[in-house]
Length: 435
Image (cartoon, rainbow, N blue to C red; front, side, top):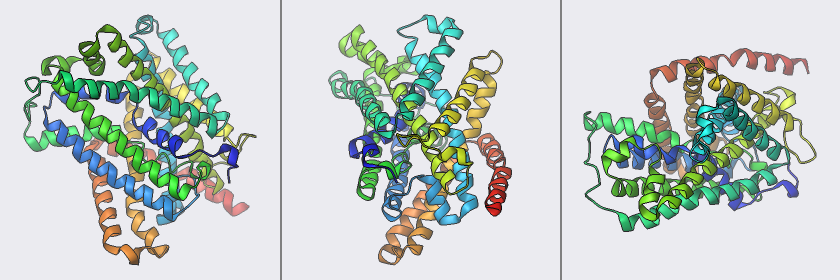
């Protein structure tokens, strides 16, 4: 149980959700979606609806299982037992430290606009990337409260340029720029499936307020509110941002733009507004790195407390931070990042990123299914039988579709990665039997 000095409130918990969902991807994603046409807005709406269903499931479960840290791990374990709980924690933890390496690379990419030398000097780039990983590891070792304050600041700073572009952009909006419904050359169903899959990854992170639950003030009220509020804010920013860009930038220009929000900023307010937005993209990735490093320490700590991960992950310092777990995660992130910057190993990095995609989606599937089981066991089900069943079915169906949409390679190699955790599960069970 965390002490009052290390507890965070609604604003910080919401910032954790928004900050971890909005990374640097949204600053470039509209350009990727542009080649499909305005059908991509339907993709956003479909994905947002699925994400809000899952957010509601996580929100409701945090009311049923109050004050339990671990989020997806705790819910999956409660519903399906130790083995499924372990697999969810194992896969999710791996996806965290691999994603952190990717976010560090995204920070460097965003900074190249201000420091072009980072494009050519790979040694300097990797040193700065590692510097960010270890700076935020240090911040998180100082406790959830310190990390949370930083998260609030970076979330405000990342939302500011996006909100400015959305509001001012409507004054520069022209329907002549708006793309036709489907310009992809594929049929409508194929194009819709493609954009829905692309937008899906922008919503990963809806569960982030549930993971450090015992570090949250009044978790039974704060965690559900933060989960729904964070997901709603993010959804509005994503959809409105894409609509505005479709109306400001001609489609030919938008499709090839490496930084569409920055280009829209230049049209709205000149060169300096473009730089303001570009700085927002860098800050966005920086905030996401801070938030995901926090998660990379908190989730294995909750798992280790149940003796499902090695004891080293639950060791805390005087700030109640799982300092050894944070260090282990960041060492692994650093190794992955070094692989990414070694010539010839870029493909390897992409391969590992492919592996982890499924491990980020599997928890949603099991949590949606566990929702009915947990509510029955806790005696909640009989009061809201239809509502709970519908939410669970919709959440499961959406998660199943998302896994299918992530591609056969992802499913195959991601499944192998999950199976690779089985020997570790056997080892942890063997250790438990000796104690």
